[in-house]
Image (cartoon, rainbow, N blue to C red; front, side, top):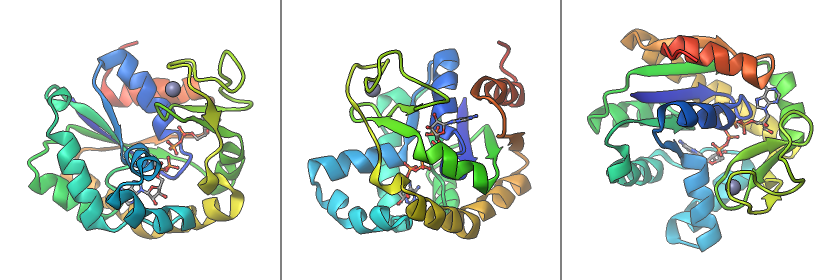
Length: 212
Ligand code: ADP
Ligand code: ADP
Ligand code: ZN
């Protein structure tokens, strides 16, 4: 199954992708995590992307499309995958189609902007695997340590309030039109993204036709 999770920054894409991985055993591909890996390693792509990411803007489509193409060509994508954070523009959606990726389902996690600020201020991310936690709503078993891989957690620089607000504006202007693109294709499901993490997992599984 090839699945896209759409949603505002902080909608819960990464958190819910982890639940789908546990259920279906397909990899989740987060373009944000891949980019942060490039930043950490100081690659040419990382240096080109840095300024955009720090200011909450989108990294240019051509860079992202090449990066995604390379990732999807790896063997672990053969039996399907979850895309978390891609596509973020209609041009990226069109490029995905041109790559021949036959997407089965697009789930749009619908949230209210005001709730996002609170979620992001408490978000903690794993330095190593990118897993997402929250200081109140999704605590790791051991404070500051990733349950999945044992690496330390950190707070992303772009999760401060002013950058989150900028990212929400970018989301409404550039990413929301992607929903209409997939609605036309007949594969979009909208899911209420307000509620507890497990309530939203249930809704997403129902939209995907997964039985718990
Ligand atoms: P979030 O999890 O909050 O939605 P991400 O980790 O997906 O954030 O993305 C962090 C930043 O990386 C974005 O603000 C943007 O600068 C860049 N980025 C990630 N994915 C894309 C993409 N598909 N297109 C353009 N920029 C992207
Ligand atoms: P995204 O990948 O869409 O940017 P995340 O999955 O990283 O979003 O979630 C953003 C933050 O909100 C994280 O700290 C996460 O633990 C928390 N979170 C996710 N879903 C919920 C929810 N339903 N209620 C409260 N907090 C949530
Ligand atoms: Zn981890």
